[in-house]
Amino acid sequence: MTTYGRLGFLWKTAIVLALLTVMVSPVSAGNDFVTVDLRTDQLEVANAVAYQVLIYASAATQPAGANDFTSAWLSVDLGNQPGSGGAKFSQVGLMTRPGGLRWFVFAEPGVTCYRGSSTYGGIGCEGTPGDLVSTGSWYRVELRRVSGGWHAMLYDVNSVPWVLAQINDTGATIYDATVTSEQGYSGITNPYTQMDYFYSHPLHYIPATSTYVDWPNSANGIIPSQDPARFSQLYSVDLNGLNTFCPTHYGATLNYWNDERVWFAGTSGQTCGALMFPPKTYIPLALKD
Image (cartoon, rainbow, N blue to C red):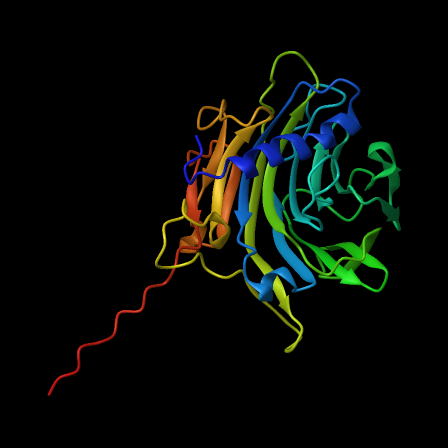
């Protein structure tokens, strides 16, 4: 199922992202991910020190299991070392568990919670249902490097920024970035809980101009399998690194409102893998004599 040949990413996703289910539940049965892996090969992106995406939860179907959830999030890797925790995987986003929609933060380097409560074995924070977020509205989430660490942030419906937690890592470079819809469950049978999340315009920061800009387009002049780091790509993968659910249960719908940087990932989506933000080819006009 590796449309563009990125098995390393798939296995990292399946293993590292499963930590969230492990921390929520003592018995983790599985996770399903519809993820956009964003290109980070350019220094402008890798050293941008701030990253954002808009997330919209159009519904918040509460999972039947006490430890089940769906979630939508932005993540970065603050490290590139092998082994458990070597990637320093860090995420901020929205989550639906029994009780309703709430925000959450999870980071392998550890966190200091400024809002909500400490959870996930002490390396995450979670808001109460309805704190700052509700269904039917867009919310901007952000990971921003500051003195002494990284801030995990959320902008409310009035665009007021809230610092949710500090991620306890001082690195200035990211090694991967993703925007993901996830289902996690703790029972024996996959419940395929209804999952409805939209995403709009991942951004990175330009310090020289103090502005946020769209993520760069995928590269031109080379096929993705030859150099996958130069491309943003959509994948569908479960906890075992396989696609066992798309498009029957989950998938993506691309190019919402004819905008290639707006997409849906969840129940009823039919796209399982795709090149995102395709390269723009310049074709010069023929000059007349």
